[in-house]
Amino acid sequence: MALFNPLLLGIAKTHLLARKKQSAIAALGVTFGIGVFIIMVSFMTGLNGLLDGLILNRTPHVRIYNEVKQSERQPIEDLAAYKDKAHIIHSIKPKNSQLKLRNGLAIRAELRKDKRVKGITPQVSTRIFYQAGAVQLNGNLAGMDVLEEARLFNFQQYIVGGKPEDLASNENAIVLGAGVAKNLSLQVGDYVQIVSINGSRERLKIVGLFQSGLADIDKVFSYCNIGTAQRLSGEGGDYFTDLHLKLHDIEAAAGMAEELRNSWGVNAIDIKTANAQFETGTSIRNMITYAVSFALLIVAGFGIYNILNMLIYEKMPDIAILKATGFSSGDVQRIFLYQAMMIGFVGAAIGLAFGFLASYGISQAPFETEALPTIKTFPVNFDPKFYIIGIIFALITTFLAGFMPSRKAGKIDPVDILRGQ
Image (tube, rainbow, N blue to C red; front, side, top):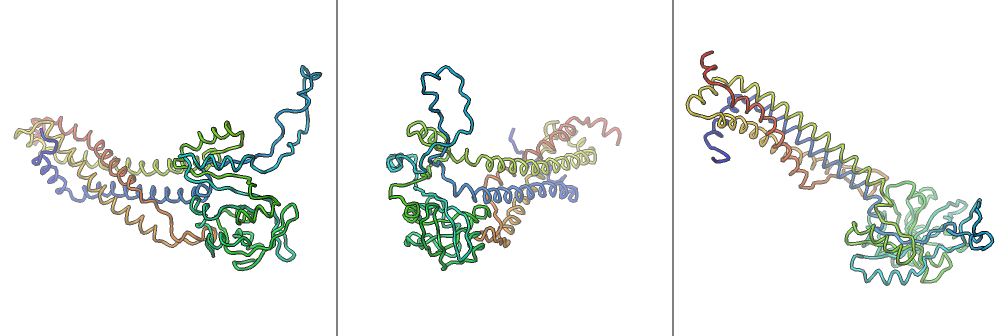
């Protein structure tokens, strides 16, 4: 028996067209559910991508650094006279250690040979003071390989009023945090005095403003060439405080961080550990989006169920005649299932088109904010999988909604109906 019988399909179509208003209302229920699902999931995932990108795009997959911490073993523990005694030690201070990453050059050279590593950038982070006239602010300065940072971590997307090449070609330049520039009343082309914690001073030209969209970062951080940061720190060319790794596969980050800790004895943290709260927030927002959208489709399914139930009662004489002329219970059941699937397919197709057009309209709507100067329109995600999920779920919902009424129609005894007529 063919899956789709042309004769049964024709009868199902005739039944639906005979009740155009009810059929249209049922289809509109699916259309509304699918359309809202596409709009919500496209906009919410696009927004999630934007929010997570503010942090994750600028976060290395693995960060290697030297952490200042207290000594794990105290001198008294090495004295034979106190070996078996209880040691109660208060106010343990961090051990005297440099921020310099030990074996930084060797680690970088070794990692460049690793096929899992897409790129690696050294960093020099130092505490500084920004000084403009009588105003002085605390801050952080990060020195880096500018062009490599732009290639691996999209540094250029956060620069306002300049470009990475302006910084890379000038050892006496700085990309100033937008918050710092605002507080010091500075702009691109001005000069700012940088004072390191060891007293070194540099007068640097502002070739761009860095604006991440996170005010706490933009009020503190600025960026310069790695040589400038090394000079301010009073160190040589082998001085690094961090190494930032970008991998080909982000899922390998946790394993590589563990390997680096074991093989080199350094502190290494992977991106998922460092930003666990962002992934959790994204997962929860996506769950809420899918739950609300699927609930709308289920509600539309109940509407189809009710309409098909009513249609069965109205079409009982037709059902009796069909059975009396040789149609089996299975044929009658398939007729009503076809009706449900037609409603679902037509409603889903229109809903997908409506959802896409509405999402496209949202993506073209102006979205301007001082916190995100590089974003001009609302973020929308046009991932094809959302449309596939939507139409599959719509067809499943309408099939289930039509299954029970179709079984009821198949069990109707034509003799009882015709006798009543």
